[in-house]
Image 1 (cartoon, rainbow, N blue to C red):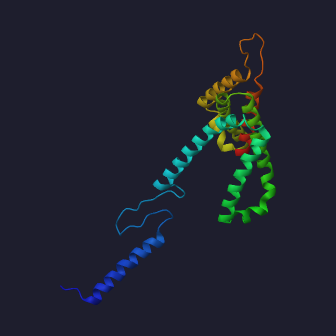
Image 2 (spheres, helix red, strand yellow):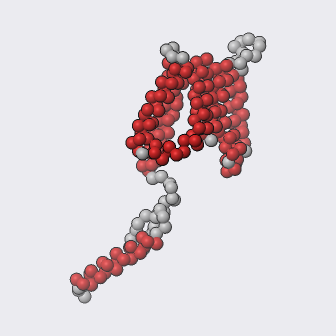
Image 3 (cartoon, one colour):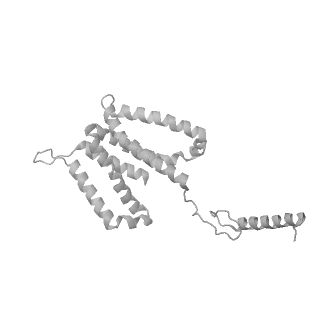
Length: 219
């Protein structure tokens, strides 16, 4: 009834061989397990808890930074003209991004694809120029509200360019939301200011145009 040392080693070897065989047969994304235990499967590409936390933190940071930007641009309008402000903002950010690219080595890979960056860079240039001029001509609150139209513009462009996105824009809830958004934007842009004559808020119109170019960029 006693187990010989040699037999113990053989049992361990067989047990280990079974585990290795299971690991070889395991589908991508399955977690290891002992024989007879149910296997847990995580869909390929799905983020874990740590990835979700990082994603939420990045999203929250983006929302905060996007909310602060119009206020800071308006504050700097007291000291700089639009072109000068854009130069300093983008020059400083380009230095930071270049240093990060050099550190990661990505800049060497991207040098062969500079031509592909011309059109996206043009959209960002037009967006930023029109946005800053628009904020100079209107208040930061109005600009912040109108900047959200890029969500509507992006959905429309995605509907035109990507077949799998068309189910979104044809939904009644989306059409109602888009109608309300455009109605509100039209009310802000066509600001009569108590006058019986309809006038155009040039700054607001520039911000709406900037939102359209941003939608072109992200699409």
